[in-house]
Image 1 (tube, protein in one colour):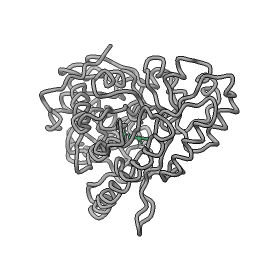
Image 2: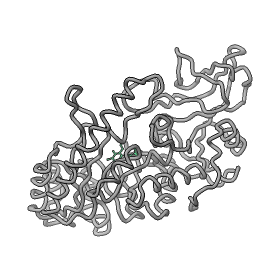
Image 3: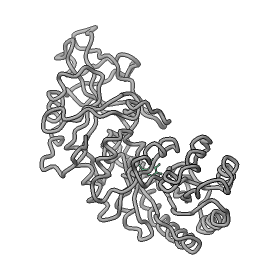
Image 4: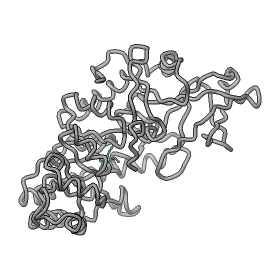
Length: 410
Ligand SMILES: Cc1ncc(COP(=O)(O)O)c(C=O)c1O
């Protein structure tokens, strides 16, 4: 089934109580735990990304979704093109249908490299990420150039920022940080048989991925905003020089940059031809805390209350789906509905049961439903085999996650 992402007219999530109650009514017949996706909220988020990108093409970041029906629906919208996959086995699987796949991280998966190297179709569709010649050596050792299809290569430029006093901002990714280093690697790729340099990527996670309006963390948020302001021009200049240097060596098909959190600044750079984005489609609760945009909460999950140890405490079965990254309270799911529920400080989102307190807990009885939101996008799909897609107040489809299709990539 193709999910239709026409731009919605209404924005019911702006009234959270009514929105989640509506999702609750639509899914009342389903047994928890289950995931729910509002098609209208997803569509609104997709169009909001397109509006923010203002004409720059958006490559869909699959790790932030991990549901093929959703990836396909987004790709059907003009303005979205190609996917940024997170492993080569995933990329090969997606490339059976998607003609333009870039693997966002280097790979050492030998079996998948063999499959890629032996298939004209896949080799024409999938590009591998490289930031060192040793990664090229590894590919050659698995399948020598003479016996394989030409492998499409994307060079990753480091996009992090070194603050004068505070040091490194951004993810530790590529050792290639300067235009000269990018050019040297481009020359190395072009000099070797069996490779074709087609792209350059630089992901500014310190701009795209750092929350800059975190509740209760005013000083940290102000610091992040200053770091972003300083990092944006530094990267724009360095990326433009690196792209120009690499374009002297190879005709690049694409220059990828950014993420959901940096669309405006990334799109403003003339050297960038496309932006990678995924989280903004889903609207996980960490994304409630950016200054410049607010995605609709398109995805949630439901649990049932199964016991009441006290009148003011309701205990649901399940809950402990904690997000990856630096461990902290912001990695926990938050309650979305009914209003007035809190996790307890001693148990948090529990392993197989989660106690809720707060004024809303009194009104909950056995069999009553609680909706929660995951902290990050994509990871919820690792816990569920399908999502219930709600549209027009009813379950319009049930779509499998990667897990539901028997796939676990990372
Ligand atoms: C290479 C790369 N580009 C872009 C993104 C941004 O993705 P999202 O929009 O889902 O935050 C990520 C996320 O980690 C990434 O690793």
